[in-house]
Length: 412
Image (cartoon, rainbow, N blue to C red):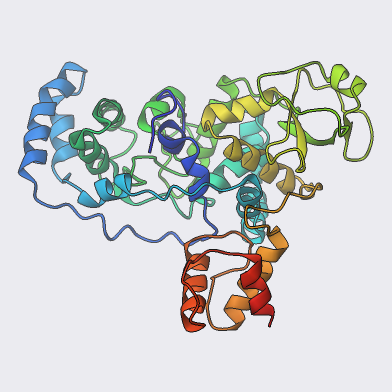
């Protein structure tokens, strides 16, 4: 993991690992308990906790808050193991969107929109952020609350601060977590989250919580951990509102561009009228509506889909500074609003396979007894394990890598 953004980014994933969060988006929905995250005795950690105490008190933490927070806290070696051994493969935009708008995520998202319709309408009225955007954040950050994380945040953050590789960052997050406890918004037992300290339905890091979390229910607590997601959803909307979200305007639109017109990428915004004059059109062939300055991008290369990105795309990046994530939020929101999938074709991957090729390969592997646990066309650890097992049975060189040769062999 790399710290790539300032600590005020809402999602801890963005603050730490930018492009790593997209690789971690999964299709699974079950909120499994983090049974491996058990405290272990460690004299060095205990000494660090004692040494940190005066620093925390100097920052305004009361002795009783500190002592209560650490009464059940402990060293979590599995947190360090997870921090040091993260999968580094990167999802393509096509893969990311396939996961972000999977059938399950869409169906659950539509159900969430309906179930929370009154709450989301009230949030929109106050903060000017549409229900579909708020629901998309909820869907990508915690699978609509099903995967909030159950690791004790004080233990996780103190372990990472003690470990020292990014000590100052995690110490600042730990101090913020103690301030949250001191404010009475939650208790140490209820303050749980991811192994890296992201919390609640919308996965706020502690410093962002202090800046943006709101008490929308009016019960005196900014409770993003409760089964009721109201405060968490409102807090995400508050973050977007303060970051410049413009209600009623798109994050971006898929467009057609003349073959000779290069896509200069983000940071080269021009007036929409200029893009229209250059021949850029909507997928329906009409001029692009003017939503202000826009950047023309082709994130999958010149042979893939093209988009005009507007100001709201940059607002999404304030929450998580990873382009795939921003596309995922925007596109999931569009789909929840009733829009269709990306229309242009994505180019084949490095192995020369299209998404449909990869889906077929997964289906054929599963049919032969090598379960890939789904056939979404996204190559993850389960698919690689299935390929390896198939290769071993067939007495092939075991690579675990998808290929057209493998697909042809599976076709028989």
